[in-house]
Structure formats: C-alpha cells, structure tokens
Image (cartoon, rainbow, N blue to C red; front, side, top):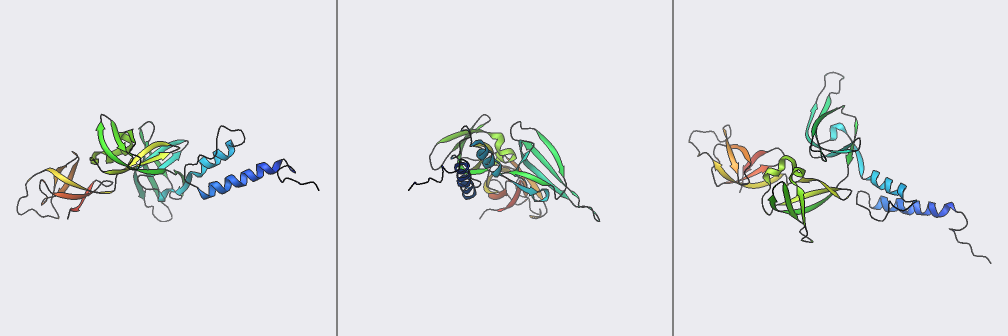
Length: 244
C-alpha cells in the first residue's frame, strides 16, 4: 500500500498549512513583537506584513487620548494635547489633536470628526529605572537584566522635567525601536523653593509659584512651604495634594 504524505498530494497544501500555523501564532501573540516570521525569507514576507499590520489597531477620534501614538500616513505621531469641541444641534463637533512627530520632533495640529477612525500604534512597553542625564541623553537601566540604554530626552516630552534619580519609567518600543517614554502619572516630589506662607492666605483659593526638586516649576497652594513633600500629576502638570 502506498502511503501518502498530506504535503505531497497537493503542492498548495504546504503553503496553506503554513498560513494556518502562522495565523494561529499571530492570534495567540497579537501585540507581541514576533520573531518567528522572517521577512527576508521568500514566501514569508506577506506573513510579516500581516504581523506588522496587527500591531496597529483603530480607534474613533473621540476615543484618542493624550499620550497615544498614532500612525498617520506612515509617520508615528504622539498626541500631546486632545480637545473635543461639542457641536450644536445635529452637528457632532470636532476633535482637535496636537501631535508631535516622534522622528522629527516637529509639532502640528490635526482636526478630525468624532467618528473618524484613527490608526493607533500598538507598542511594547518595558519598565526602566532612570539613572542620570548626560546632555540631551537620558541613561536608563533595565531592572531585570541591568543593561543600560541611552535615549534622547525628547522621548519623554514635557514629562521629562519630573525625572529624578531612581524613578521607574516606561519605555515604549515600536518594531524594536524606542519611540516614546512615560513617567508615572502620579509622583511625590519635594518642594525646593517656595515663598513663606503668610497668614490670611486661603489654602484653597490662593496659589503661588514653587520649584520642585527636579527644577520643574509648578503652582501650589499658598500653605505649601519649602521642604514639604507634595503629590503631583505629571500629565496635567498640577498639584494634587500634600504628601502623607
């Protein structure tokens, strides 16, 4: 009796079986940086292209938030400001996005209708510990491998002013390349400089300028004095409360 191999009866079957296997791998690991598909091998380029496409997903414009990274005509752009203007009557209003080009550093505005679909980049986030600054370069350490990585400070945008030695940050990778960084939204900082508290000032209504331990400037309530620990929001750049 002649034994038949399922991969020799039909020349198209091996490719079909391989496509199924690749699809299962993609479905199981969607969003994870895959290395099992080699774009340099003939026949696997389509699968690699599909993997790359799966790293992206779509959101409505009114679902976009500050910090999201979108793909606009092949360029990676980070949303630095988001504003949804409500319309009147049957008008839906519009969404205005302030974007920063992650490669060039340039900024520009993009206006969308609320239900326009926007391509959002799917990123791989890894925790790092901030060590020190050397010029425009930030030196970070992987807390698991202890390997160090130097990245440009612009990756952290306006949050960079809150970087302090030892704090844990998130570095976001796209196709194996760091494209942006994030600090924790809530952090505790010490007040390095602040005018003395004057009796009669309302602790809730009167604010004054203060300098934090990293050199960042922030408005704080009048009752906050030099040397105090405060909790801040690094995304909104605002005072939250006095630290316990």
